[in-house]
Image (cartoon, rainbow, N blue to C red; front, side, top):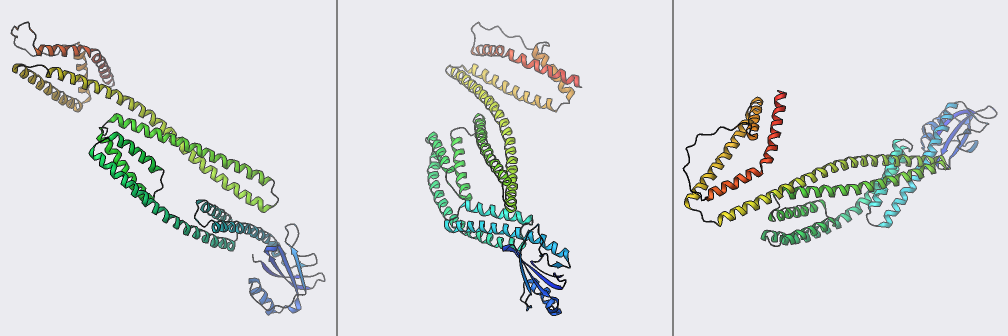
Length: 488
């Protein structure tokens, strides 16, 4: 409804008069003027309805009575000696004008708050994220009031224009800061490029790699403490990462599964610790918001005016929304924490397994080197060398045949696979003697043992040593074959 209305009514003498009512929002006053019917011609009435109500200039007669009344919810707008013919319009004006006054007071509070922000920006003279956040939070409050329609469209447009000017000023200040930031980032990028060139040169030379690795770790630590632009950060990070990989390859760790498992464990543990710190910060932040929420709820119980109560209620809604959002993020962090705990447990088991395998490989390499050294220290006759070469060829051919047999077993139907596994298990367990080829009788040899016989004796001892382990494997194979047979 407009802030100006004109209605016909009657005064205390029951004379018909034209009453004009104007709401002065800033003062919470209703100005009432009355005009006798005799001075209100058709032209004058049209001027009231078409121009005066729309705040346009119009030639109007002088009123015979002027009254100023404070707008109240409990008392009527008109004095007791005036009575309107359209009472519903008067009641509607009283209700809507009261809302307009409250809305104007709220808008005035926002104007004052915006003026404080403008003054802070003017006095600061430089961009600050705190100032940006203040302006952002202020505009979010205004938007919330506009969505709830507690502010008029004109008031919202006014606040929007001033807020746009505030953000434009902040963006201008931020561009100046960004220019300095980009300049500093370029200097730091050039400094790191010089340091990395020296490191990369020494990596190519392959000298003092342990020292180079430690220098890279120190460079990485400094890198994380310096502010770069996104493009500069990515470029420097890629060079540092590539240097780390080159050092690891030069040191022989590029294909070490044990080192990879240990590195994965370290990364997950580092990420886990960082997540715990982030969850702690989030919990503290939620605690502060909950304290603010309690404070606002206590204050709303002791507010003096309805406007302040409305403002407090709006703040409560904002804080509750913020707490709910943070709780959702905290729940997601909890899920990530559980996932990382599972990964860390798997990484620990994987690292232990790789360590055991590495120890076994080292033991095998040591034994192989020892045997090779012993064989190399002895002089072999041409006949013994020929026999050893033939034995090695047979072992190699046997390995190829075993590989081919395994492929055939995998391709065979399930029933054939089960039968084959059962047969293997029986032969290995000694329940069935394997078929043997007819061999010609060997000639009697001298009692002096040859190198071949000594090697054969060593192999027999090795077979006896792993006999117990083979028996365990046989039992497992038999059990598996029995289960598969029962399922068929």
